[in-house]
Structures are given as C-alpha cells and as structure tokens.
Amino acid sequence: MTDEIKKPAKVQHPMAPKGKKARPPKETSAQAVVSFGNINITSAQFVKAATSLKGLPEERLPMVAFLGRSNVGKSSLMNALMGKKDLVKVSSTPGKTREINFFKVNKTFYLVDLPGVGFAKVNNAKRDQMSEFIREFVEKCKDLKGLVYLVDIRHGGHDIDMETVESIRATGCPVLIVGSKRDKVNQSELAQGLRKIRENFDLDANPLCVSSLKKFGLDYLWERILEALKS
Image (cartoon, rainbow, N blue to C red; front, side, top):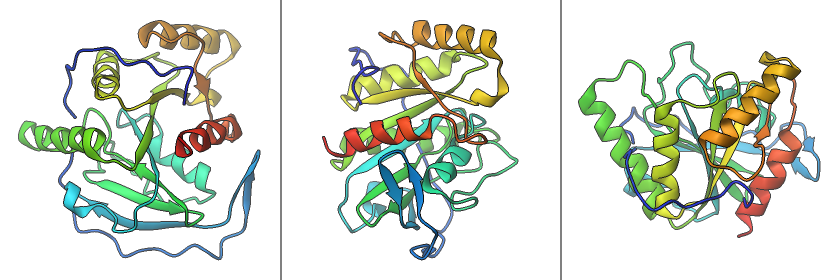
C-alpha cells in the first residue's frame, strides 16, 4: 500500500468495540477456488471475534483490516474478495458489527473486519468503548500490515471519514483509500466522486474504486493487499 498512504501528524478521532460471543469457526477449505488476477482463494474461514487485544487469534499471521462508515458496503466487499456470499455477515441494520472479526484466508493471512465508523444505533458510552478498542488495535497489533478504508464514491467522504483516516495515519499504520459502490454511478458521477475523494483525503492520485456486485476492481485491490502483507 503505497500511493495513497500519508501520515499527517495530529490525532483527532479515536476509534473501537465490545461485542457478542464469538461464532464457532466456519471451515470453508473445501470451497471452489476463486481467482482474482494473480491470487487464488482456496480457503476462507471465520476464526473468532475479539473485544480486546487479549482476544486476538493465537496463530500469528499478517493482517489487513477493513474499515469505513456503517453503510459503505464493507461486509459485501470482504465476502466478494474471499469468494463467499455470507462468510462476513451482511446486516440490513448498519452498525450491527460491534467486535473485531478475523478471517483466515489461504491459511496464511487474516482479513479483519472492524466495526463500522459511525456505529449506528449505539449509545455514546458504547461508541466510545468501541472506538478505543479499534484505536488500540491499530496502534498496538504488530501483525497489522495495513488498513483498507472504504468511502462511498457517491459522497466522496464525510467529516467523520476524514477525521478517522487522519487519526489512523497518525499512528503510522498505512491506509489505502478505496471508493466503494462503483456500480451505483455513471461515468460523470464517477469522475466527480473520485475527484472529491482525492481532495478530501489528500491523495496524489485517484483512488482505486470497486464494485462488490460487479466484481469490478477486486483484482487490483488484491494486488495492493498482497503488497501490504509482504511488507
């Protein structure tokens, strides 16, 4: 993760979760192989959910985490990347995820689902608790290699998105900004959305954009994820 990574100095928006009991691991090693460019997804497995650093997976593997507003399409994107329809739970109620969920891919690395920014239908005390855990995870998890931050391409980013990304960059964690819901816009709206994201997040070039529905851009996103995992 290189082009879009910047590390401004100040921290404004702390982020994190307390959640429900972890689901039992769901083995999917027998799944059909799914290919994206140079990567083949041969297995994807839910390992556990954590509500503190003590709950991280025992097996030490490199990680890339996903974050964004509660309704940005994070769960759908992660399912598309892993070639599964329902491995990451997609809820009609934004903000339902209240813990950090770990998914082991190809038995060699984790994709990590963080609670959505904004935490819909969560009271202030719960929001602060969730925010603090996410912040602690980003700052202290030594296996975290980078973070993919999703921004709805139709809106170009809200204040809370910019504050959150600034906070993460300040920790030194590489951040890749990705525009989601490419299938929801036409060419004119796409150009406008990319320009807004580039300006709002101080990027040197237009961000990568993806569509979980149309599988657009997933091969390029996997390239960036693999680069980060090797760093």
